Image (tube, rainbow, N blue to C red; front, side, top):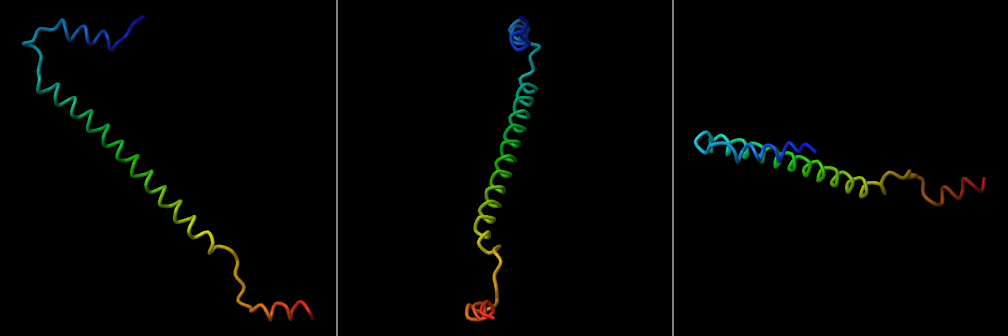
Length: 81
């Protein structure tokens, strides 16, 4: 079975140390790590926004019910007529 990761490791071991550029490797690794951390932070931010929205909807849902401005005595008088 062909494994590209294993093949790249074999190529890395076979390459001569003089042709290996440490600065380029470090730059590539740091760039990849920065992307991963940035994506994780973005998903975390979206999760917190969704959580805050759900809390706001939960706290405000009691105020969505219809409310009558008429007093209880007025309502009972209307029913008696």
